[in-house]
Length: 187
Image (tube, rainbow, N blue to C red; front, side, top):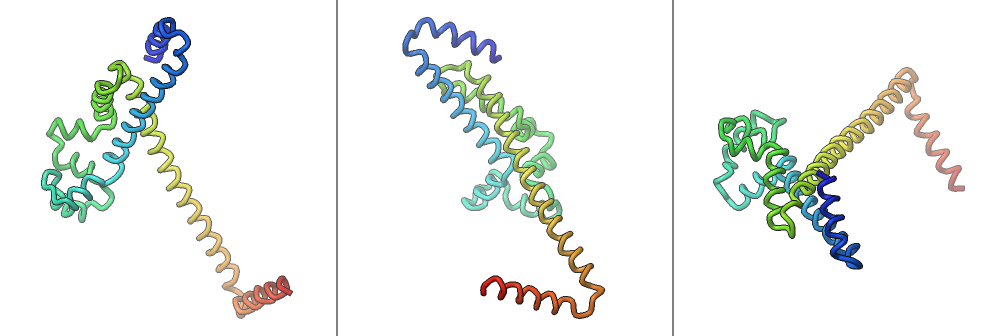
């Protein structure tokens, strides 16, 4: 796909002359803006409960927020997409909007249709999905790193308390030691 896109750009560069760098910059920026929009829509739809929250806020019954609330009580780990896939799996449209590849493809076709060139749908799709999966991976990595940091901190506290368990007044002495050290640093 990128070879076709670069071939198209080189074909048009001979027609544009001195305006070519600005033309390319505008087209690349257009692709990046639409790709960011696609990634944002996919993140909001697939990784958050924005649809449930807003349908609950504005009392829109189309997304069945009351049924989802009841279902969520028994399925704590799952989200709105899991609710849709569990309860409406036989519906083709539900399967279409719950798949990041399918939803991304149709949204990129729509974004390509409203862009300056319909052929931009391919790079919009590729860059949009790439951004979506990078953000998903980074958010999981961030949660993992926070969890590991908390576990390391708790392990250090546990080891400290295990080392202090055997000595009788060690906690009082260690507190006094810290106070003496703090007074020593001030004076």
